[in-house]
Image (tube, rainbow over all chains, first blue to last red; front, side, top):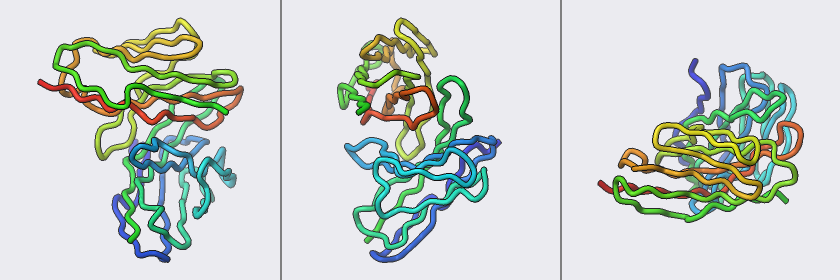
Length: 114
Length: 111
């Protein structure tokens, strides 16, 4: 199993450009999440999905859109990038069940917006 | 609102010097408390899940404990390879609600 993978690993954008970050998991997990991590701010939830075809807003959703067309993939889109979106983005997934279960994280995407 | 506060923000230890990291939480019905380790440039890696007050879990030099208000991550005789950021997170409610993370404690172990 590859676990959770993220593409790309690094990206530099100019203000106003758009891009899509791809998260893929091969563990048949129902739940998927997108976080951003900034110095001193910890992990903040952007959007999440509780199953194929579903999405929901997290703590900091503005400026981002997501789609979950296939169970194994969760896409994060930036339509018009801003310098405030410079961050490290992490994707995570979890199986879901009757008791609390752990999240598996991807390796991250480092995005710089100039 | 569910909240997680970790202390200290940073901790510097000599190799072999045991210590504890704190995670205080307020949550409406704890479903689980999680500890993760994060190395620089990498994603968080799962360490432990604790479900109820009084529970303890151990892994090598790490031991996690849980009370109704806080969790401790005890590090016994740490080594330089234990240097990392340690994250605490809680899950509240009865379903698979999103985790709420603390800001982490950055641990440095000096040889």
